[in-house]
Length: 404
Image (cartoon, rainbow, N blue to C red; front, side, top):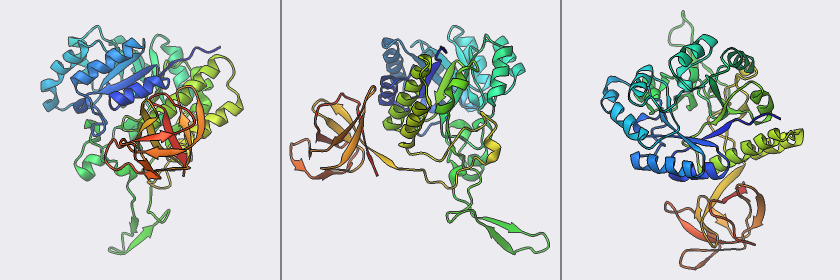
């Protein structure tokens, strides 16, 4: 029997924090907008950080707060006071990458654990020893490490908690430290403003030195040449080997992702961990959970560097994600009242995801909030509500999806 590590999910706002915990997360990482590397998607102020921490602790779970930008001098003005304010809410750890931010945190909140962000590019035993000596509690290892290297680090520094990413989008730059966005759009990826130029579709040309002005196009597909857009990471099949390496935390990427993404990934990885803990993680379970993760919008999946496979070609064929299922609603109140996310039609066959079960249903009827019957409904305005008639009532935060 292998001891299951922490399953750590992202939270872009309070609603998504609650969904992540309800569907199986042991811990969630959040951040204030101005100190996060997902600035556009993070919607937290100090009061909401406090509420998220209280919510986690009521569940006997943990909440980590990111201060993982690479700070410029202009950010230092408010940084110390903001760290102090967040620390007063008793988060379970700060996630930091910048040595200057790390020094400030150590000085002003020495009792709160510090986790070193993957942005710090920790890839060797001596670096782990250095950070341990300087007070880091846990290191989120660089994604460029292989499983053998992770084992070597754990064997050499067994006291250090180690965490790795197991699922989600990957950055083609070294551990996410990218200059491309700054060069091409003036928006720094290292300050949370990434424009994702690695996902853009490029048309590439060759110009021979002795023939200036004669350009020869290089094409990989009709959409252009995609040389920088990485595939998405998925390691659910390989969790037994990963747990055997000594990692403490399994992390899922995606603070910009929907409630559907969080519910699906949290539930799948939690189920895998429980099966492994009970010695029951069989081939059919692996296949079923991989099929479940195929129902998300995603690029082609990869195991990344964990088995040294990245050299085989880990860039995605194009910018567009695979999309075989659609998130159509989430139950937000009793009597199967939903927030509409995509078009629903009476007669649609849908799947309903709850934290513990998966159901198939036919939509027997639809009505608006004024009890007017409808044949179909679209999202329309933000937070469009509708009542869905099903064979039974489902709990709040159940997820509705349908096959495209």
